[in-house]
Amino acid sequence: MIIFLGLVTPLITYAVITLLHIVIPARRVTGYVTHDFTGEVLHYRINGRYVLVASIALWFVLGYTHIVSFTWFYETRGWALLGAIVLGLAFSLAIVLKFPAVRGSFLADFWFGRSKNTQLRDGFIDAKVWLYLVGAVLLQLNVLSFAAFHITHVSEINPGFLLACAMLTWFCFEYLIFERVHLWTYDFIAERVGFKLGFGCLAFYPYFYTISIWFTADLPNPGVPAWVTAVFGVLFLVGWVLTRGANMQKFRFKTAPHRTFLGLAPQSISDGKHALLVNGFWGVSRHVNYLGEILQAVAIAAVPGYFGIWMVWLYPLYYVVLFVTRERDDEKICAAKYGALWGEYTAKVKFRIIPGIY
Image (cartoon, rainbow, N blue to C red; front, side, top):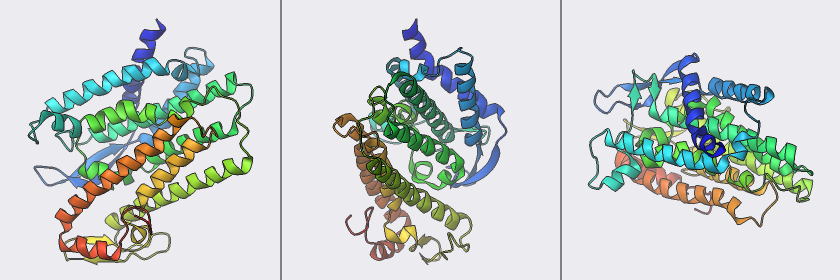
């Protein structure tokens, strides 16, 4: 019975999150992306922060009343991952088959997707908003359950492990707090909805991102000095400042191009049609936000203190591979979109991701 319940845990969780997304009042906002056929700016309905809080409250109530154990997501994590994999595959296949081919190969269409912007009722539910929402909320519930297991089952509690849980919690909350800002990011602008995004959010995101605590939740305090743990905490904050700062600066420039950001007046280059930022975070490197994401991942992998468990390093390694390849794709897209202006920009901002190195 526990196997079946574990397998359907992601399905039930996603259904509850979706219901909360529908019934909880939401902001209707416009984004950056335009409709493929009409050219009109797309509308979105966002309430992620409230859905996240409501989901955590429901998790707590179910645990407190002993209806569902606080540690359920940890105890059934293997079977739940398998269930999420099946859901991710099924969703990806269904969403790809719904739309006409855009590439010569079905496998390429399946991986990258066919439709950029799949919406119901003028953005009442947007596929990308929904995918990131359910993935982030399930990730948070997994983190809480893993933390509950560690606190209740490990004799010598590891502060580094709990800090890793706090980092992942911050990661989920801040994403949904700044949910609107992400409408101006690469995922919403360039990605299509297929296996990469659908499976990624439904199976990969909520489980792979827990890998550093997945393999250390049942382990005691390794005795890492407090100052080392603090260093990883600072590294995480530095990464967050780079990522959030860059995304917020771009969002401010796109929505209010004459306003300052953190007291910094925007400087840009323009060809009369397009404008590109060349100062602040976007003057440091062309994708300093990617560097910030990688630094956060390194901190989350390292802070539990089990440096010899090689599996925990898969998380930052994944980010390195993801962002290096994404940066290359984005370079091609921007060169095609901006033409000579992009050449002028790359001459001013010479480094791709890491200032002074790459």
